[in-house]
Amino acid sequence: MTTAPSSMAAPTAAELLQRLRAAEYVGDADLAEMTALALRLGRPLLLEGPAGSGKTSLATALARALKRELVRLQCYEGIDATSALYEWNVAKQLTALHRDKDTDVFDRAYLLERPIVRALSLGDAAVLLVDEIDRADEAFEALLLEALAEYRVTIPEWGAVAAERPPLVILTSNRTRALSDALRRRCFYVWLDWPDAEREWEVVRLHVPELDEASGRALVTAVRRMRTWPLVKPPGLAESVDWARAFVTSHGEWTPDWARRTLGCVIKDAADQAWAREHLADLFGPFT
Image (cartoon, rainbow, N blue to C red):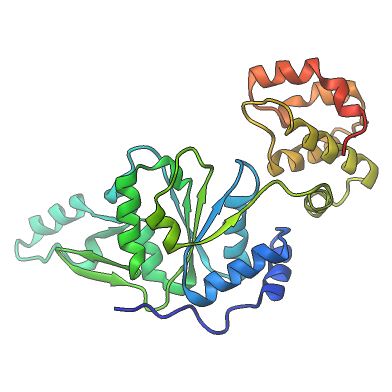
């Protein structure tokens, strides 16, 4: 079986950029182009980059922009087929057999769809987010490849679940381990790095429009400088937005004292906070 690509009505890259912005996501032309191609050709899109650079939020924004259901599969060490594909509702099956021993308990009414099967059932009405695939092991990668090869899963007791038109599949990785060549070959690829200062300010302004430009740009510059520090958990885009919201909410002034008191908005590790407090003055000097 060959799965049909997504609908030819898929948006162009320019249209997608506009829709993403309406969904409060600021992308660039390259990202929009690769996403548009993934939609048209029915290919998964693998996003790699530092934690907090906007990979997961892209999938969320795409679901809103395309008016599709977001189906999320959060990966973790030890994840297996039951968590990702399906399982049977055993309690419901036993109850049905108790009432009528001739009940077909392998009917779809007793099937519990997990994220991959749910997304295949929805087809091109879904965005399937396979989040942090690098946290799963290679065996799970192989299982995922099998399911995405033809966008089809066979359930031995019941039959096959297949998508005539595939969901948009977004895989994210923070590169905690190397992914297989087989998975990379199956996907289109985007490296999603930290945005430059102008685009990060655009993101902050979009989410916190009441923030004045001078303070906003100072906050963005400070966060970008923090990312150059040897931190365990560098602040991501979400932390930039949180700090900006905290600034507006607290009617703050951009001073070392305010920055020190609100470090918990951007620095989420005790050792990192200790480093930041010792180098706080660096946030108030020039930075390019």
